[in-house]
Image 1 (cartoon, rainbow, N blue to C red):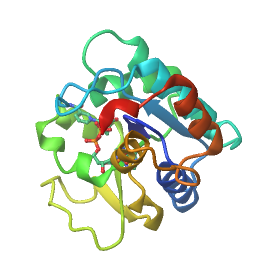
Image 2 (cartoon, rainbow, N blue to C red):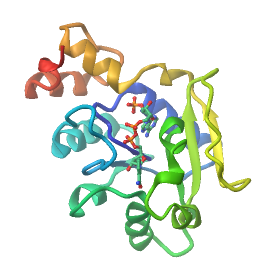
Image 3 (cartoon, helix red, strand yellow):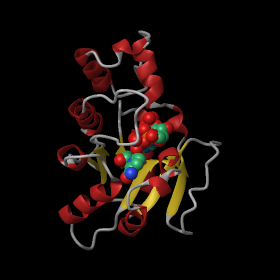
Image 4 (cartoon, rainbow, N blue to C red):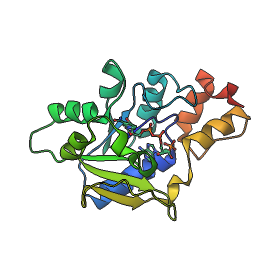
Length: 190
Ligand code: NAP
């Protein structure tokens, strides 16, 4: 499951759990992005902070793990590299599903080596019910969309709330609320 996770929230966790159930996955590997090359509209938090929040949020669920592949690889984060690194770390028989936000997947034709991405994993785009999706123009069967009501929660909204001094309790795991306060994240966004 790839994402910026700035911060990780309960929508991400519910989405991971729903997809794990539906596709009978043994493990969901959360992969926080290193340096998202297509983002310029806001300053993305330090990768180590995003990684630690993801570890805190997923610690209690034995199906969930967190990978550092995108943090430890130099240069911009490309999903083709993420998937190659994970393929190398797992048994050859392992089936891979790349889960991420449907909005992000909508732009996949602009991604680096997107043809190769399609060969390395089945794509799963998670979205909130009723959300209209742009057709990514991918071959039939290469992507599945899954509606997840909890994705009404968004990282942007969480950041804005912290910036204006509102609570994000229950939107993100309590440990993440405490980590954000301890590190002073998002305070200067309003
Ligand atoms: P984004 O543009 O920050 O997010 C787009 C939308 O998708 C937002 O609504 C976001 O909500 C949601 N979203 C993102 N990750 C999600 C997740 N794991 N589960 C549920 N919703 C999610 O997207 P991004 O985080 O930068 O990128 C997502 C993934 O696509 C990453 O793994 C990234 O490396 C990959 N990607 C690859 C390329 C490339 O290879 N060239 C280009 C772009 C993205 P929240 O903000 O609430 O999460």
